[in-house]
Image (cartoon, rainbow, N blue to C red; front, top):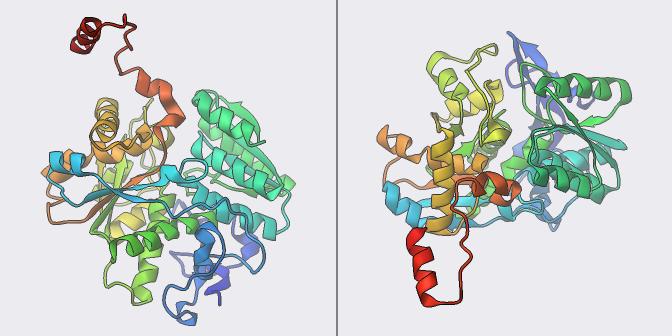
Length: 407
């Protein structure tokens, strides 16, 4: 039996929101905030699962109706120990939830699976998404699986690999010069053409498709199954807060179902610090941090969202920032010490570890999970720029030794 009640609830006002109004956030004191799907967990006997594919094994806790689902067997990603990195930072129980093992190599597949399934159930023939890469690739793949049209609004500056993936999955991809221009166009497409939005499209930013964000709850369910309980802390790369908001709701679900007695601390890793500012000064939707180009381009936002801030403060969480040099060094450390190659926007979770340990936010006795959101193969040129050139040598031992010594 599904626990979903067929409507949503606004997380600030508590007002009921019908599904017909789900895709447009409500402005409360200047903040754009989406309603969230409502559930009655007393309908369930624990964390019930089904035989559906991928994350839809948790179908009773997802906001979808009976019938077929759009799945590429996403989810079920491994929790991998990081002994090398853990030893360096004095965190022997450090692990990474490696979401690069998903079908399109990122955690966005969880959002796309639920959001596209909901769009199909609503009878939509086109989905539209504003994305710098992972989000667009995931939505394009799941739209292809569903046999519906996908339009991606991106930026000219995104890596070629991202554009190639989106186009290869059959999406119609166009680039705009300014990030906010994507939202202006996307809102017209949603309101005038009835296309289903797979991402946010308002400013100040609010987050993504409220149904799709529920897909991230399944990360929390899987972590509980893999650890035997919830971890002490989860460090996630954060832009508009979709994943940590979904994680928070997933962990709360398990408390309400009696499977655990606590919710982990959620910690934001970010390039420019808007969540750190919001935790210090209180959330203000108009607050903006100085920002610019970043190797962690997919999370390089100067704004915090209410949903992200709420997940952090509700769990007694924290935030930490890292610059490009620290982020790229962490990417190399993850790969060289523990064999995990994550994109810069994900490796930033490792880059903030020294600061978090120094501040006392993390201690040696804690179970700490890094959310590894996507593979480094999505942006090879950025990684390659900071690596030495590969020497071409003669087939002689002396030549090999000289090349290795020079590296």
